[in-house]
Length: 446
Image 1 (cartoon, rainbow, N blue to C red):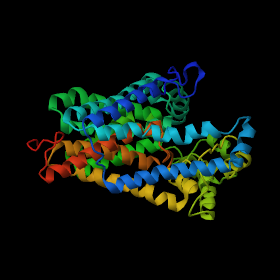
Image 2: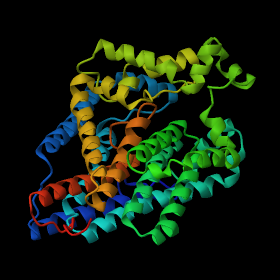
Image 3: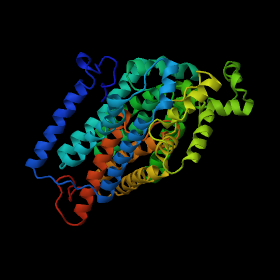
Image 4: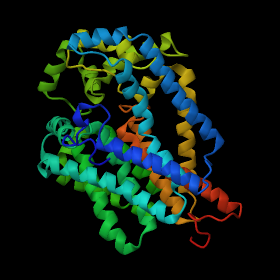
């Protein structure tokens, strides 16, 4: 996953869609899992309530696609403006259904197959290395000089360079790095002091630098919120590092501060000239800058939701209802909103309240289970696993206010793997409390 999105990785061999290295590896792993789980007599022991909610999650995605395929006239009209064709038929099935399930299935395999400490360690190491390797690619592409340029220049460079050199969008990378920092930091509970200083701290520093280079303000805020939560509720002794971190960022990464405060402080004339055609007053211009233009789209999206609150409109509702085209015609091509840039609004617009309640409840349950493990100090593995899962889930949920999507995609694979590990440890903890034997959680280990 650290190199799959890299531009040098072929997405289709011999021009055949889906024929690529990732799918080859996945098919091999999938059938190996099916074979060995039968040989080892594994039973699917995920909690029934989560099984039901996962089933509903997948069913809602399928129904949303069916509704899109039945009427995609709005998307066709928008694509004609750009001289493109809308995803229909097999391409829509692949993009809007198969790919959603594809990014979740590796986590389900890990949940079912991770039954002992060795397998758990391999999974955790692979998960951490994925984020570290992504961070190193960001640093290599962006260069350290980007930390001293202006906030606006940092954003523009990150938008161009990260997508081209790493393959992930800078906003997605910012969200991933904000959670990955605390995921790796949680591993300190699992290693010796020597390994903490040799491996954990340097890895955290690499991820922090990469996150700063993305120019993602939501990622910055998410990282700070998660850090405050972890330090207040678990590691209060690290609170003294807050002023140290603050002054270090001011000195060595001024572009990060400028980017974070963009729109909050007084804007320069170049920005005002960009938004004059929207006829904003000074206060609204600042709000437009703070939200990166989302203030233009969100009222229109909310209005469309209020017109179909229970069932929504189906997949790609933003485009299909003509809102994307309306914004482009009224405000110019500089205001591009193919989706609401808010995962909650997108899901409500596509699937209504009926489709939103089970999905939102599913994520709330995951947060609850993760928090339960994180606060349980009886075993180190509980703290580590709960902390890792909580970091990535909360990073996703917070970032979803300004971006992301509840339709699973490649940027969420790490989160789903952390969820799988959390659920496995959660189930093993229940077994230990009942006096049953566990190969994953040692009763003697505290």
